[in-house]
Image 1 (cartoon, each protein chain N blue to C red):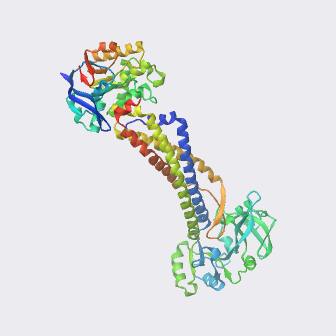
Image 2: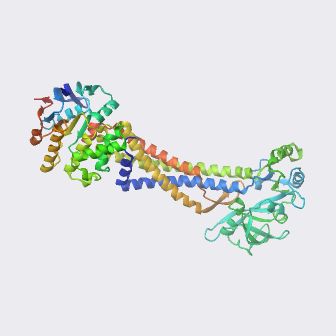
Image 3: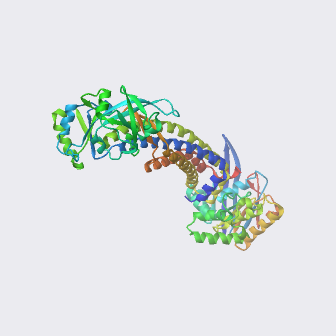
Length: 391
Length: 222
C-alpha cells in the first residue's frame, strides 16, 4: 500500500465520534461471539478435565450418560475379574462400582428456583481413582452412614449445603459432613456418598450406573478392549477412557451452544457491518477531494481501494480487540446449565483459548472487509475530475 | 523545442443524450521552460484543457504529446504512473491532506518513487526550503496561513522534479500579499529552475507573469 498508514489512522482519530460508534457496534458483536465460544469451550474444558486418561469407564451400550446406564451386578463382577486391572494396596481390583441419580435442590435465595443435582454413590476405590478431589472443609462421609459431601459449586450456589446441614432426598435426611474441590471439573457439581447407602435410597438394588477402573498399564487399554469385546457376557456394555467419555458428553452441549450462538451473532453482525459501511461511505464522501488529489498525484485506484479497506479493517480490528478484551473478563464468572448427558446441573467458567482469540479477531476482520468493501470500491472508482470539483 | 503539443483537441460532455461541447479543435505548442497563462471567462474550457494536458481527463478527439509521450494513448495505470513523474499540480484550494504535516504532504508523491526514506527526507527538506517553509515542516495545514498552504502545495508539486507544472487558479483563494508571494515563487521556479508552467487564471496580475497567454472563449482559442 503506497498511501501511508498514518493517513488511515489519523483519519480515524479525526472523526472520533463515528469511529467510537462503529468500534462499539463491532465490539458488541465480537463480545457476544467470543462469549458464546468461551461458554462452549468452558463446558468442554470442565467436562474433559473431569475425566482422567488413566481411568476407564464402563457403561451400558447406547447409554447417553451414567444416568441412563444400567450395569447388572453379575456383569460388574465379571468385569472386575478381568486381567490387567490395577490392584489396590491390599490386593483388591481398583474398581469403583457407582450409581448416579438426580435430585432437586433449591438455589441460594439470591438466584432463586430449583436445580437438578447429580448424586454419586462411590466406593473407596472411587476416591483413589480421583486423586484431584480435595476435601476443603469438614470431613469425609463415613461408610455405611447417611452422610454426604458436596462439590464446591453445589456448596456455593445451593441452599442448605453447608457443613452440618441436612438435605432430604431418597426418602431420608442426609447430613452434609464436608465439601470438596475437584479442580473446576464436573465433580464440583455433584454430591457424593456411600454407594451402598445411596443405591438403597434410590432403589438401585442389583445394578450400577457405571464402573470406573484403572488398568495396571495405561497403554494396555487397546488390548484390554479387545479381550472385553470378545466376552459374550459383556456384549451389552461398552468401555472407553474416562477422558473420552466426558469429551463426548461435552460435544452435544458445546455444539448446541456454538450453533445457536453463532447464528445469533451472525444476525447481530449484519447490523455492525451496516454500521461500518455507513461510516466508510461517509468517510469516502467527506474525503472526495482528497481522493481526487491522491489520484491526480499518481496514486492508483488499487492504492485508494487498499487505503480505505485498511481503514475499515483498522476500525473492525479495534472493535474486535475491545470486544475480546471485555469478553476476557467473563472468565471470572461461573455459571451453570443442565448437562444434556447427565440431566443435571453443570457449573463451569467461561474459558478463553488462543483459538477463540484468533476466531474472534478473524470474525471482526471479516466484518471489516464486508462492511468496508463497497465504500472502498466507490472511493477507488471516483472520477478524478469530478472528485476534484466536488470541493 | 516544445515540451507540450496540443493537437486538434476536442472535448464534449454528455448530459443524458445531449452532447455539450467544451473544447473544439484546440491546437498549440508550449516550448520547454515557458510560463504559459490560460485565460478566459468562466465556462470557456480553461480548466478542462488543463486537466487534459495533466492527464486526469481524456479528450473526445485529438492528441496531447508531453515530452514525447502521447498521453491520450496511455492506459489508466500507465497514466497514473506518468502523472506521478511528469506532472506537478497546484490547485486553487491547495488540496493538502489535512491529517498530514507539511513534510508528509510534500513527501506523498515521492512514495510512488523508488527513493529511500533518507533520500525522500532530503528532497522534501530541500523543496520546503525553496518555498521558504523550512521552519514549518511539522505543521499541519490548519496551522498554516492560506499562502503558506499554497507554498506547501507548490513544494509538493515540484518535489519529484516534474516535466510540467500545472496550476489552476493558484492565487484564486489568497489575499493580495499572499497572491503576490505565490506568483513570485512560480516566477522563480520558472526563471531559476527552468520549470515549464501552465497556469489557468482570471487574475490579470497573475497573467502578467506568464510569457505566453492563451485566450479561450467558448471552447476555442482566440
